[in-house]
Length: 383
Image 1 (tube, rainbow, N blue to C red):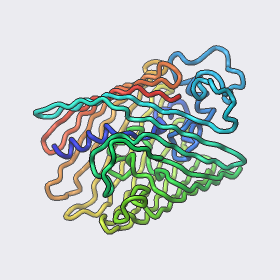
Image 2 (image 1 turned 30 degrees about the vertical axis):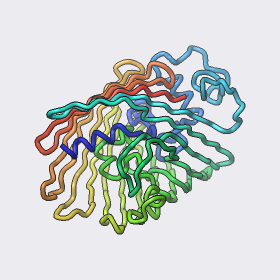
Image 3 (image 1 turned 60 degrees about the horizontal axis):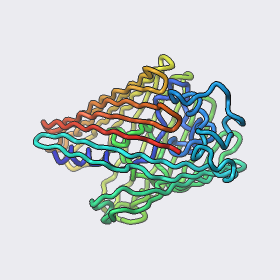
């Protein structure tokens, strides 16, 4: 039960917004089609904002294309609904708020919590192939000790800040703080193929990343002296890391991804690594299927290789209304006393208006003979 409750507690913590893999159904195989980050998520580009307005929301589209199309600094697709017009010049800004309610039921008890999961300001500027990107936001209250320090009741944190340069030929180099490229970036950071592979909300690294686009292929390689929070606050967890990701688009609605990750041993952690593959297929413009399988090679006393498996089926039952189901599995790896984790998740993503999204998720988790349920309700405002 302690394992389950710790897992559910992480749902009450903020994570940056990531690209939706469901949009493979709309023939978007690359995150950079709509986002500044080469690994997806975060601030939308002007085109991404325009696409959200015109194509994704239930009632946000208009019959007339706005003046200036995707570059228009006015209208509801723009920052603060265009109240600033073009006053910010080449700087693009976004404000991300996500008030939420979390309800956890477990044998013998129940817990409920209202919280503000996200309150982040994000900005980016692009000039002559250069991109500067940064976020600053409220770190949720948390009395737990993380990376050797006790968090205050409230604090501010910059989850990502980096600078990159991209050539006309598709070669890109990036340096700063970011999450390494690996597998499928499911928006739910508690997904078994994310949180158990050190791809959770606080697992960014300080490092350098190169990426190259070669026709239907995208290759990304990262090197880093260690996790950002460990570098800043706890040297005992600091260790050299490297990751690689290779994506091949087989068709406009089909793609395959191979990934690898390695972390050197530290004073507090054993040597670890992961290798995995993912496949995405959208048989129609309203259905997307994603499956990722990863082998977690982390060294554990008396344990072996553990496997993390996540599948997600998403169906758009009406424009801007997506229903999802996601069975997940994490094996114990043979560690003494360890138990496999199983999850069945259901969710509804509603996009009634441009940048006004509602998500309702239900998680049923089973471990060590105990079953617990979690309901998460979120109102996501990206202004």
